[in-house]
Length: 301
Image 1 (cartoon, rainbow, N blue to C red):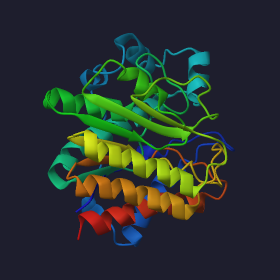
Image 2: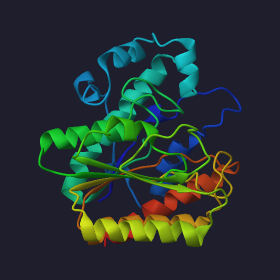
Image 3: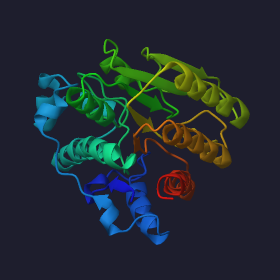
């Protein structure tokens, strides 16, 4: 069965008109059960991440100030949230969910976190709705457990995974790949191991062409032991914060390509939902759900 991290803490209360639709996490949780893709036994509720795992990728001074609510107002604004104790707990639980998903993926071939993909968190700061880099923490956990193994972080959010790139810039065990909007946030990009910067208004055909060629390159010339997939749906043409023109069908084909690559290559995958900011939140839900439906077909049958 699919194993999926979820906690009621994922839905953190935010000010009215906030751009980040926190409700989507709860909606995905219920929709998965409604469609019969997952029952209650498929979900696991993470506890809070312990400090030792966070310090594999984050500076202790930053982590301590974050959990003690000592970040400055400016630092808090850069994350997009006003910090409080509930937010701290939420971030620790999300990161723990992705870390625990590693063990489920190794056992079952794939595992999910309904939240996660907080790729704008650096070693020493947070940005863009991201305070702790959950996939980086989980990747470091895996590498420490299996020092001779290789990890691919496949980031298809519309925004570059700048924090992830910075964290692993000198780590040969983790290959960072980001395909994102060239002129989108963040304005100052970092250097991933492989970046594909897309022009504004890129549509399905070109988007899927670049992705297909990239996956073919990985199949031919790289051997990975674990894939982290950041499956942001802010590439949608309806997204408020994206600048691409990928259709819903294009997003579904994208996810199919990635999941088939992992399945056919027999590489365990940890999947996190990433961003999604379409005005009609039903589109965000549908885009995320299509990934779970495809995973159910591939890995459960």
